[in-house]
Image (tube, rainbow, N blue to C red; front, side):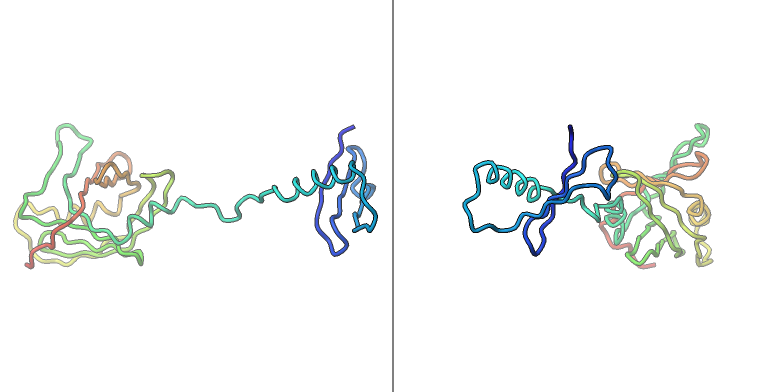
Length: 199
């Protein structure tokens, strides 16, 4: 008959609790092994060895496994420069800003996002949640932007508006893609390595 066995160390020695299936927990038999001055039999030695090995090799599962926030931590404290805006509408196509127009995004460790939007600046808060390595959810609160008059063709107002519709991100190589809700488009960013010129 199969028996369930548990053991724990007490002040009296190793306590082994044996329960036979079908018996109530209160009816289980408890045996306490106390040190003995007499020479134990070979069977007792073998049994004690097996019990000690079973107790010593048990490893409890981790109580605080690594969560999915590793990628979120990796994104904080980074600065990105806009590479292109991908439209889901073939008639619109992709939009790449001219090299002399600066559009950058910095994700600070305190949950703030700072933007350089051509001749304007913007700021807001952001929240990141990861679902698997390299991708997850990201949302931005309403972006507050300065109101300088940038040259024609500036993307400042468009970016400031679209950031409120960002819902997810994907890391592919060194590129960061921010996807808008309802297939509204994708903002592709590359790492910013140069300091933007003063305006």
